[in-house]
Image (cartoon, rainbow, N blue to C red):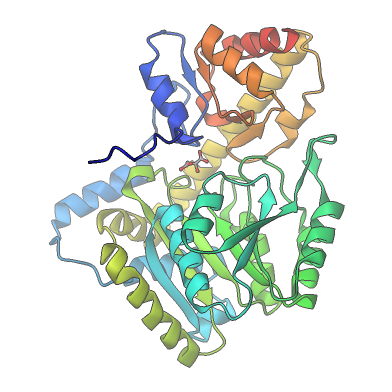
Length: 400
Ligand code: LMR
């Protein structure tokens, strides 16, 4: 029997969705999970994804297993999107890459690979704060978790001095996880100049840069610009590891489509890494799901569909920016105590509001508004119909 199984806490992010679903109020708003909603608050299937679905349905491909490392067309295109077609590891055939069960699966494979094969201390440094799931993923894979400073509560911005100092102070050869763009949960990224400094420090200290890029395109509306940190590090000769997700930028959440890649020194090293990736993945889930990868490769292999997709990504990013404006203006109009400029300056899917856990609880109880207890809101959950109600409710919660 399971008499000794203790009850665990709900997931800090997905548990919010469970509470939201149980709420009967017609006014309820879910600002918990980072999932895009359109201007009517509805999940959004991108028009290019619909076109790709049609193409695939007409083609009626078979449902055979994919190879252990996934659909080769997909991983090739995913790598090109992140690194650029002309990037050296791709041209020189020394990028090991595998399809993954979205970003979480990529992180899980990456951390498990490091736990097995990383030559140095098996400690991963995560930013404070970081995406909640980074911590259990790393621990469950057998890495020790330490953190570096990232967010400065007093400026509601990046604590760049603290970040640099902590990364410098980590023992030589440490694994450092970096959010490539649209940092989750804070919405605060280093500038390009700051990324250059970070690259120098990581190099000096012989650290290992582990990039998580779940939001390529969501930070600036431009997939190229959002890949700056990744591409710069690679140009500087770092042998990075990169996790990618197509959940947000193609709206393929439940299709679970992502990739993880390792920049290797040589094609020979790549072949060895590839072999170990297979050994790791086969007992985990054998091989990845096929449909989402086909959707992504249908879009990215067509210049026309890619062009349309980029416009759709920009459209999502722009709608979020518009909501930032409207939320900020309304909070100010309501004379909400505090400084709210960060709502406009933060980027990506989230805003780190500064709301306290008790205020978050009050919003759920009194207004049926759901967000994570760290005060993060998914901006995409706001729209023309609910942004004023949200601002009014926040204003009340802050005024107490
Ligand atoms: C989030 O942070 O809300 C998203 O990355 C979704 C998730 O799986 O947590």
